[in-house]
Image (cartoon, rainbow, N blue to C red):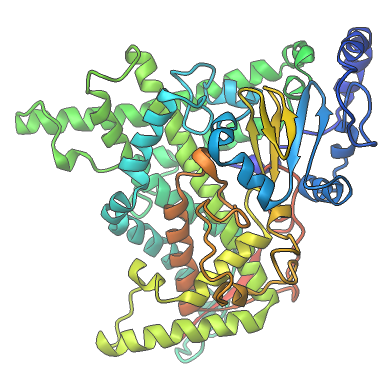
Length: 547
């Protein structure tokens, strides 16, 4: 899902008019709360730092990083109708994500788009990413991790993942072959480069993989434009477009009537209904297949071979009597979880791999060193398999430099530069009192570039993760100087899946293709938003390597 386009600080003319209309009530509210403690000098009455973030030329995490240089690793300010606490050092991040504070900050703010588009208005219908922390959330997370994202379950899904990755790589081979045939007809000794837009290819690869293990989509056999996968993609893209439209009420709750008056809520509900119908049809297809399978076998009990994907597993779990809610409410978590899992995993994997490839193309010496490591490992493997080479997940643990490359890429360009949480009660961070309802912004981008922790923090240097000092630093939330997946109870549950898939794809690209940028230096400008996309899509000239 294209969450990254969320320009939630976009200053629209509609808002200006609304602000003037509501000015008297806002002034009264401001006077009532004027006893709040000091804030950054650039903050203005009523709107806080809204005017700072509405500037499209500056990235939010960079702006917050510059403010941290001036105000320190922890500071607070009003932003519209809320108060924000910004944390920019690993020590402060650790304090937020350990002990009782981890529980306090285990909720996320619920934007209007999530409430409407993903039908997450109540605890029984919210997905894993947005449901409030508590017993219900723990049960949902247990279901997702145990049945989809655990190491044991990923082992069961490996053949499905490899199959979808193979299909995507076959598309790259076809691109190279077409270029070869058009440029050198009849000459079988030549090779040609195929131009590939990696954003599109990696997006489809990630969607195909997670779509297969979650929904059972078969990208290698079902290519119809009316297939479930195609309809789901269209529906989720349309819904995501509305996520990019800022809701005034997200920043100024007392101006929620503007969202109603502008038609935003009506349009969101329309697309929420379309998405709901598509996901419901996918679930119903699974129900029908299960009924047919049981009728054929004369057995009303779920059999192991019925559980081909995550939806099947969820349906089996929901047949158990101890789940809360009526039939309709009990069904809603599956819908929300489907959107959560596919959207979250697709974005993180795609973005990180794109930034990694961009860094490699701009640092050829690192790419050459990675190629040496990969060739050395698979050269030995070729000798033991009579020339046949198949990259397997087990190979990843031996490719320490490739692992270091991905870590370094995630350090410099985290997919989510700012992690946002919401305090459920009063607490203390860094000696400061934090009221309930405060929005916590952990500036991951700034934390991962602290000069006190990282030598030459802005330089792409994977070797830093091979040194004794930082060799054991990991991305799984226990080392607070490196937090690309977040930390604490609300850390991304798909860390293992994303890391395995990124290592597999990057290793195969290095092993099987020569890669060049058609424009020389790759533009590394990032977009504004919750997710860090490249402004300029990544095109690569790919040539098959002669293995």
